[in-house]
Image (tube, rainbow, N blue to C red; front, top):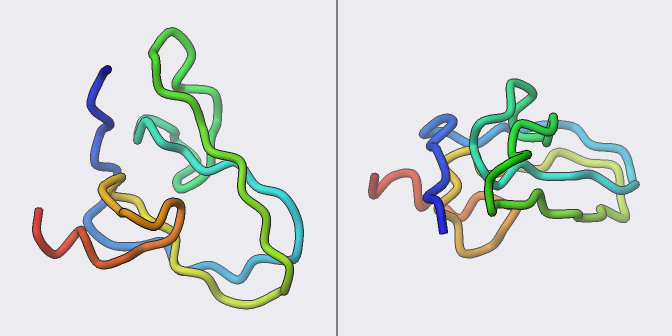
Length: 78
């Protein structure tokens, strides 16, 4: 498996509406932290996730979180 690219060593803190999203797992999307199709041709697929309430979320951009797609602070150890 190809290792994901670290897009940033900080989370993307975003106000999200309730709904479905696609989180970039490869790190190559120009629309971080969301998928823009840059993974095509690799063996890394985006992750579908859903939020049920509108609020601020911290989404991982280092691609090392154990709580995908949410930040767990793993970027501090990189």
